[in-house]
Image (tube, chains in turn brown, blue):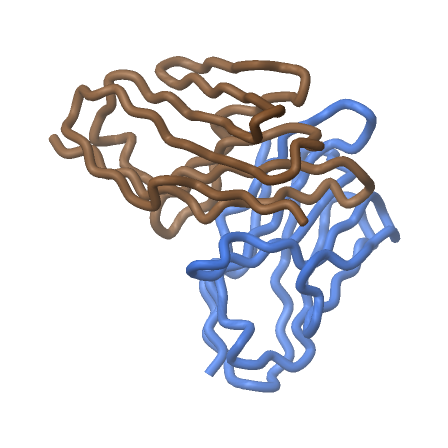
Amino acid sequence: KQEVTQIPAALSVPEGENLVLNCSFTDSAIYNLQWFRQDPGKGLTSLLLIQSSQREQTSGRLNASLDKSSGRSTLYIAASQPGDSATYLCAVRRGGATNKLIFGTGTLLAVQP
Amino acid sequence: EAQVTQNPRYLITVTGKKLTVTCSQNMNHEYMSWYRQDPGLGLRQIYYSMNVEVTDKGDVPEGYKVSRKEKRNFPLILESPSPNQTSLYFCASSPWGTSSYEQYFGPGTRLTVT
């Protein structure tokens, strides 16, 4: 059974710091991995999608890496800003008909001004 | 604007009173899905649909029904809600095929059953 873990559960950093959020999964047979951002009272915003054949994806100040063999992904945020404060979720899609995403429980990030 | 919409956004109801949460997408996506989010448990899939008239159970389908009569709509039905269905619900959609597509999520519906 696929399990997705995110560490740390919460993180507080001063503005301007570079930071790394971690995601690990137990079954390396994934189709892709997606990073989301969730703001309080709002839905999930897709940040980056990494296909199983890719090693990393970049969008602006965000860079996500994927190491399938070790079951790990990291989300790197450069020069953090208070507006980056949110919960970050990673989700893996396993193969098969369900197209189901299996989510971690998230990392709550607070960027202090 | 490409989006997934859900209604209502907030709902407080009583045990046993049937309710429907609507979900609609304007991206012509084949695949749609419902998730619930609970503290400490993350998001879990309730039901999914690969196309019109094709639906199947996810991980936590008990107490829920769905239908897919039109491609754009995928309502979630709680025929007899109970307090353990108090949760934050998300609808998602994506294309369906051999390529690997990202999923788009609606804004969520916060349901409280008393």
